[in-house]
Length: 258
Image (cartoon, rainbow, N blue to C red):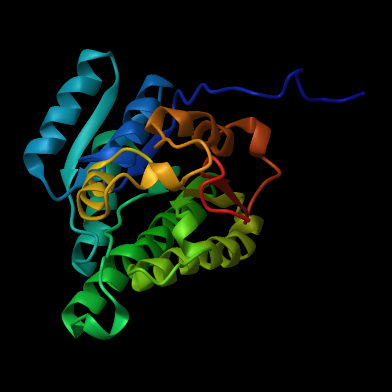
């Protein structure tokens, strides 16, 4: 006889506090709206203050609870500060969505050292440090948590047309997910990743301007809508995935090949 309800699924995040990075556009913006709609109190972060305020206004108008916090993930000093501010306004952070990231459209030998550092700091080093900061506080409070790291199908496939360093960092995000899941499993902190394909966003708009309609090369000849990622996001945060940690799900509509 099972002690679990049937079905063991819920999207109710009432009482939980989420911190989402890179919420001023694209996927991060959608993630924040969805989490707030499911009842979580959401710390929305990013570098563009005006965009943060616009998002906060939209979430609050829909009855959600959020706190806009300007945040540059490449600034190590701001990492503890952003968690402090989120906790002060909303409570202990028990959901972390590492979404912030930047692309590159350069060949490796043409990248400056400054650009390389910026890519690593934004796409990998910052998320690692922020994950550790949130985990330390959860462990000290003896509370469970969920973390979702946003990778990319570009981390699994590189065609040689630029974005080499992006591929490296997004591949590393998957490995980061795997190792942190092992370290923190004993603390009931689940760490998983999502690897999106081509979805509508400011980043994608820039790529389409440079490269033309890349969707014509995809099996279904279309670009994804961020809403099509909602179910995977909520799966990793729901009771249904309680036994799932250290894995990733590709959401690419068959775009990336296998």
